[in-house]
Length: 424
Image (cartoon, rainbow, N blue to C red):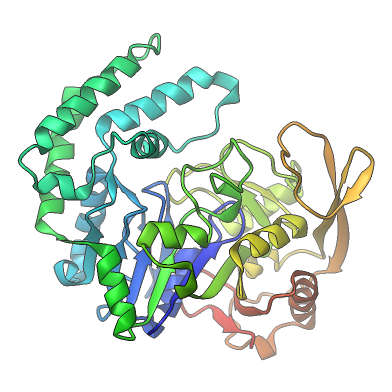
């Protein structure tokens, strides 16, 4: 019986998971997304074309691979339809290669309205939501009010939909000065529902466990990143799902004993979108330089990302929580222009030097402690082998491996599928 390998982000999301899934896909029969919603923007680049996926797993461009949207994912039928339409030009056999869990929850137009109203009401203390309705949908899921993909095939779907919308309208009344027109939003939603009905839906937990019995190779693809996990992230500035390895078990119906390798993805530096603590954030021209060199603007929202140096205490924490067995370092080419690169090894909190993430880093004063490493000052984007990489880049990788105690198997030197170097 095969096991499910997991690939996920070790920072605050945007680490480059989509690219590595695309690179690894030829090794797998099935790619399965296990949590999150269309707040994900997984960017893939090949043959000179850039693609951004929001809900559909990143293996979709490989025609021999099955792609599963798991029960832990929340689906916006409107965004999903746009994604499918964007893929039409590639003549992919979507009905055969894309399977959707009947237990995945649906994002209603009123979920998006609740998200916007709630964020507007928070004013300065807003969490930086992507306003995609993700939070309110997961709240309905845990509140046992949600609608699932399987519901769209029942005769009572419209009734259930109307009941939930009425509940949401009641909630929206509490937000002063928030106006909306649900009639404007519904036609696109129901068009998206019709499209969903035409696709292949499955009881994904049975499907995946049967596939394991048959020895099929499976890769679970996470969205967002570890430090946005609802339990272990920088709460309350987090997403609404479990973004960590454990989320694979609940988001796909896979037993903990069936988890295989865990591939942790991180950037050679750090970024964060939205509000919340960020120990190594740079508010200077170095931060601007990283942002511009890395094109650090959201794939889904276009928002400029906050940038800073790599943070080892946070990274070690993420590796521990996920049981990462191998690492991929992304966007190392973004640091090609720097004379020196800094690495945060500790924080100073209340005059004490610590090397771990405390309970709450939102309201405390902390100062990162850095070590400096010599930069490589070389264009690495044309490299085809890690053996030919500048010694300083090799030293940086060795330094990180020593501190993180997990092998860095892959080093990415550009967005294209071909710009991926094997270190081991």
